Amino acid sequence: MSKVKADPAANPLVPVFTKFGLSQTKAIEAVKSSKGAQVLKEIIDASEQLAAGVDEKVATLVTSFASLLSKAPEKVGSDERTYLVEAIISGRLKTQDQLKGMCSVLFIAFSFLGHL
Image 1 (cartoon, rainbow, N blue to C red):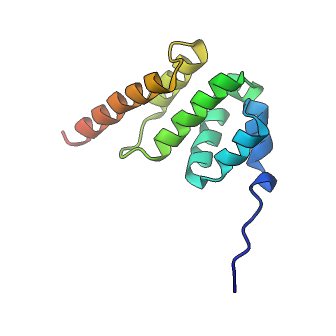
Image 2 (image 1 turned 90 degrees about the vertical axis):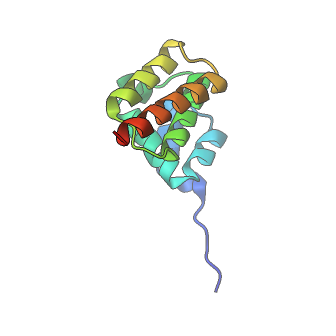
């Protein structure tokens, strides 16, 4: 018996993600990773500005951040999440490379502090 896969486009998070600023295609892609989608939803819910909607470039970087967080070896605190999200919204973090570099530093710091 084969399993029938649910249509990702029917996921209730797709409209949330499109309102946030992702294109329909990117929103559908985002819900395919349930862990990443949950982290993205938490980030959006924690920011009135994100919930109200941002441009697609900012939305894409925030989505990438959520994906990185969902794969992080250590749990990142809400203050650190908020700081990085605000850096993305304000334009201090503008590229995928900058985001990945900052997350690498953050994850290393959390890993180090967890072993003290």
